[in-house]
Image 1 (cartoon, rainbow, N blue to C red):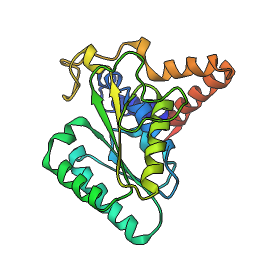
Image 2 (image 1 turned 90 degrees about the vertical axis):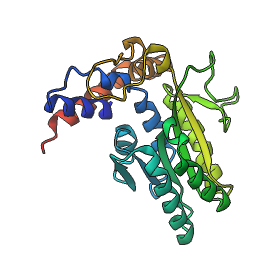
Image 3 (image 1 turned 180 degrees about the vertical axis):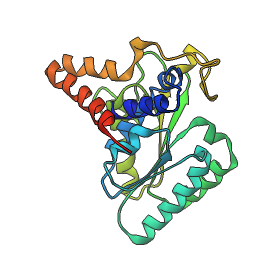
Image 4 (image 1 turned 135 degrees about the vertical axis):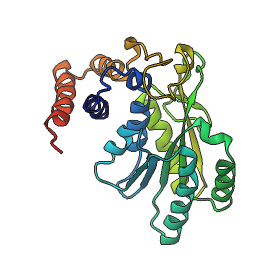
Length: 242
């Protein structure tokens, strides 16, 4: 919620408060929050700045964001992973990318190095294709199925899968990959362009914050606690002064 409100206020400040783009990219909130929650404070997060929830979720820990394309960050992440191994810290490097990064030579070259060096690297990939009905990438026992896709709108599924991948990388078994699959393809083209032209916003009934809030209430969390948490995030952003 803090990431959502931060982005909306930023767009308001530059006169783009009616832009449909934030709603079309809501799935990055559960991806970022779930992935960041799987890391230790000493681990490294290297992700594009558009994954605001991931960076905010680090709460001041080691985190690097940039306006560069995701493909540029993969070799950076591999380099940082080499440094982490050289220091013997036992830390893990996690990077967030979209599937477009997988089509370039930098991806394959970087992963070849990471695999050969058994580097502690986790790649969380955002993919735009419809998942199979009920597919979350989590077994009935609650254990993550590495190599399977997780539902990008489910922060707990993302957390479980990334945590398992992080544990695998931390124990010296080499890099791991988690695919977070969105259903955006069923609702129009991905919003690569600025502005609202050609962008179809995610339907409100699929807002991941609303979905998760209802899930918490159904699970027994008092509704008042959920509502106060959401209000607190809004108040924190509104109260911030440059």
